[in-house]
Length: 451
Image (tube, rainbow, N blue to C red; front, side):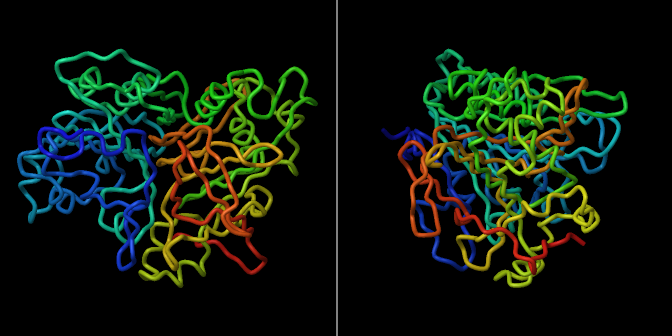
């Protein structure tokens, strides 16, 4: 079925994962996509976009002059307050300020928080396109840094009001958290979200030192939300994918193998890895259990997590130049803490585009004896406590960032080659920007340190 403007009404009716197109290589149209192809600006009536980094002039060139665009972004001039303001622009793109409405979400006082979410709501005459991923709205993230995104089209009818579901409610709550104007959130009532099969996971800055945010609309965030999503998927919130009984720790079977790929790493230790690992099994009561009980559920040697992160060699050999390493963030001081930082969990990223650097934030979870079922996360969360949260016994979980991602449940894994595994969802291949191989750091491998 076509829309009134001749474009397909629902190009991605069931949802799909795509990698961003890369400069100077043969891009497969079934696996990669450009920003222009996502926006389809000639037919676009209205847009909401969010990003940590924004090149206003470059972004403006992707929209028609008459298209209203609301831009939610990090407030670099101040780390507190909320509300909207005109876009900050360079002199050469002064007209941008008249076309973009810039919104800054709430930032609790105390510490330094960031707005790291990357989503798009693209409104056409008869459809809404939902996009979530890891690419900032800057040229490099759509040309020389490999990113991932999820995209799905939904039917829109401004004359109808459709019943809500778990996805639409979660999306509305997440938009309220980001201080998105109410008139945009209200448009979700006119969208049929019945085909949504993904689950939304977000994070919001919580503040510290007695300073807390004023609005928290989602019932849970970060790794706690992930635990609830996975628990719901297996239909038994008390068991999860590991078959755990929190009253009988000896009955828990940790079957997950996680590969967590990102472009930034922060302070973490084995305790944090254990918390995330348990939540990944679908155990929503983990935040309420003692540290000792968590250790009984999973000992250090059974935490099967690979942390995908680029090495210094990867950056030096980057086909687009070593300057791309500026997007890969890890402090040498954090890594140097041998007693805390889990060096043994580091794995090499094998990019699908030879010589490229991966900026995507993806978690691949595999379960069971055959390791052939699981889930995949795609979004903005790097594998850090700042993004996924740090559980605190007797206190609320601490978050530092705004983040947004989706979980694709019931993914299937099959052997593609002797070394590589293929992953699919909804009977379609998931084109990850890296090869799904398990390659731990060798003794000579050193991660790339940010300058």
